[in-house]
Image 1: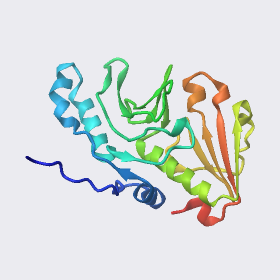
Image 2: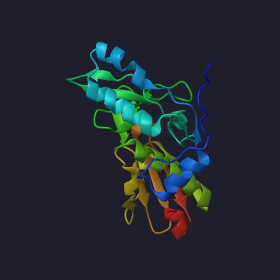
Image 3: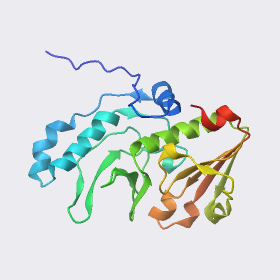
Image 4: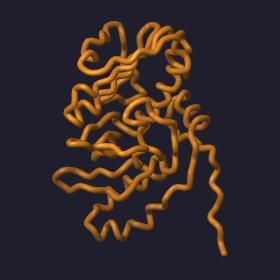
Length: 221
């Protein structure tokens, strides 16, 4: 009788993340046994899924599969565990695959889009970050800012459109598309637009303002 190899619960952060995100993954994350999806290759190919799309899902699983991170401050916490599954789509509309199951019952799922973006698939596909690295970077930045900020304010609905970003610069490592982070002289602003666009629900707009940050608080590595 053979037993499955033990998996350390302490994850190793993938290469390419910022020092801040690397610490977040390795200190706050948990690694669980991940599904080996290579065994599904022949079955998926038999259903007409292109080999290149299967390769994309396998590459995601190799990099992120089995990583459980603390809940995100929006999207009801984000995926419970990052994990790829069977690609879906067509040559005309492009191919996507799941990025992990939701923590709670949701009106959308988390997907990796045809161009590798991390986003939500609701009434329409809404890319949040240009890649999964950006999603993880945004989680790490939210955790860091929440820990070091002297004040945290939330603005909801159409009032988000009045947030003044003059004097702020985009935070590049989060690879923001629909969702973005902005860095000022002593504050950080996170803008969450994904649900508002994906569900056609402007009341779901939300901004988080982290104030009173020093140099370490603004960057954190």
